[in-house]
Image (cartoon, rainbow, N blue to C red; front, side):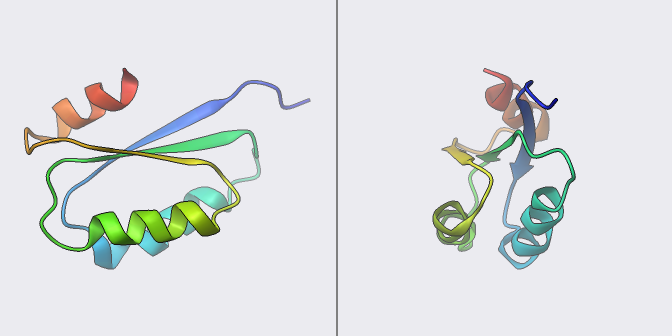
Length: 81
């Protein structure tokens, strides 16, 4: 019985070209009570647009947060909050 919600926190920064493959990999997991938390660490490419596209199409909820560039660890901590 899968009842616990698992949050997968992914810091992203200028990764638009890799985002589709990454999100698809998470969505293929056998545990289905997941949410994806993407923390954009100040991307300057079209990462934001890609995230919005996947959030609308995805089977797993995607939460997206944008913050000014501060590094991977700060982005992870923001996702934990």
